[in-house]
Image (cartoon, rainbow, N blue to C red; front, side, top):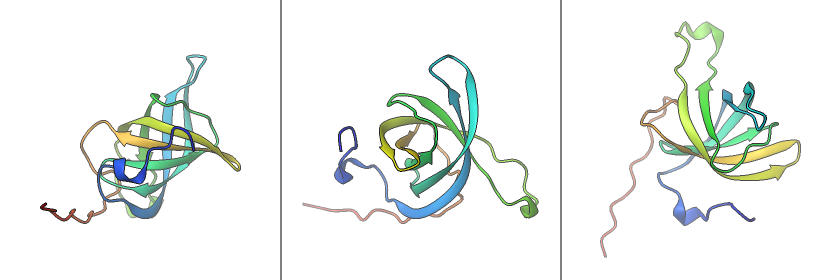
Length: 118
């Protein structure tokens, strides 16, 4: 699939979890938007985003994880990402996102990558 990076180019260990998120960005007409989407295949450095709106590689997006209302937590802070690759899918679009700032919006402990010596 054109534009999709090879598995070896990923930075960080991915975990096959899914989170409901609010994604915000600026549309091609310059109008801001905020949509609900699903983030999957998450890591400390990125995720896949499944959404109904088309985005382009290079687009800047903010993601905010939507937590259950009964969690009694304050509203989550948004995190900044950049679309690296985008492809159409049945019912919408899938984008590979790279984190542009440190943080862990998923609240997940990621496995440490093993040190490999040659």
